[in-house]
Image (tube, rainbow, N blue to C red):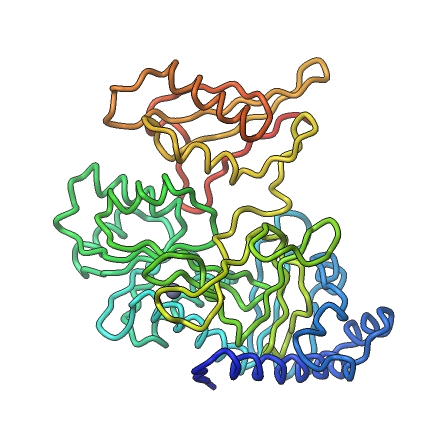
Length: 424
Ligand code: ZN
């Protein structure tokens, strides 16, 4: 079911109503949530609206693990029509159940993402993300068809085929990870195919991407817009939000879920605009609803109105994960901080890798950075000294910098590994 909200008051009324429904639904449908609420001393009647959110307990990734294979299930298994699973770097995969209505809701959210990126009837969308257990492929495709566009489900990898379809079918939109977008962009540039293809819009998900990498992709492909789509398997999958044509932050669908930003150490709300961990509470999910689920993704809310006029609020791009944090000589470093610094340096490409090692009980960091392909006017020594001193100044650590040839660092069709920790 699709709703049209003309103002924020209507939206708020809807959120309050749906939160109360969700709290009742999980309390009555899930033994896990019922006992969690009881232990926390909260009952469904205590929740009158979204102001009462912090009366509810958090849900964490550990809770999902303990309830494998059907975590947070709040409906009868016979009402479940599909499952998806996320990669899960350690131990068992996370499996999530969907009812027929959940699938419809996800499709509607995703179609809204495409529409916000100007994609609809008449658009041709080459979908280069993984199909199967992942939420990516099927999500991008359902949303694309929901928006009335033509889906070309090529899946990831296979550059030869991708290139062929880009030329023969003339898609104006591609969907992929930023690593794949970069590979493709370099290939298009190297083979001089810019005039033979028609990509106007790149929609990318599931991976943090620096400003330098973004500009590099757009320039080499010749696209007009690059949009970031957000989402996680716990929250249906990708399609939870996207930036509009003004690229002022990610508009997220606050009629489907509530977003809170907390300090990961204290669990308390941060001040508006401060970086913290995203916590999500779903408003319509039936099979596996989330109550204050701690995503470990870091971002901040963007205040004010967007020039596009959308009533949907915005958060910044995902700035990293609380688990990606590198502990180095007593300092906590997020890879996003290194990205941000390197993006402002002239004469280097967007690609880098961080190596951590330990000698005589002391930690060492080396960052390999690629020289910019066609620009030989910069001196390696100057560049590395510059990077070194900015990192020292902004992140308060010392690192060795090595400038390497353009294209010599590993490229990936999925997610690029950038941190190599050899300290154990
Ligand atoms: Zn906007």
